[in-house]
Length: 134
Ligand SMILES: [Zn+2]
Image (cartoon, rainbow, N blue to C red; front, side, top):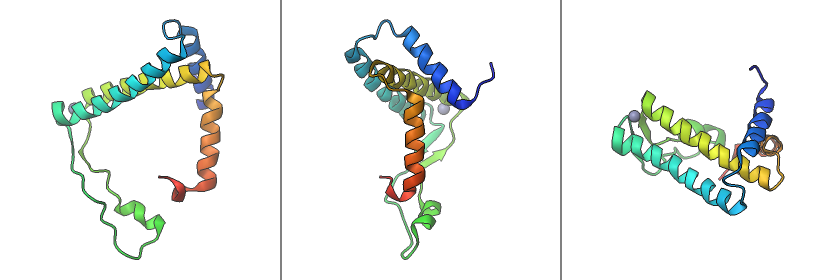
């Protein structure tokens, strides 16, 4: 199936709404959405503490004085060392997909179109630039 990205978002939300039987209640979807976010965090944590393919070495960002905000980007550290192995990448990807399912479910139950939200957020980011992200 060849689709454009915006079509995929619409098709995904339609499929979620079609499959949304067990978690029809907004309360079920809210709690599952929260749980799915926790599962993403857990999967990333297990990549560090269980597998060890990545590690986290965090400390205060070290920025030279007198640099522009644009220049900050090249000095900002993700604090991640190593790279995800195939197994951890697969697990994390699956958990993120599960989280997208419940995000899409919330959109469906509240009559939002995920595609519209993504478009609006994209436009907002373009208008604001990275200076306003926090
Ligand atoms: Zn791993």
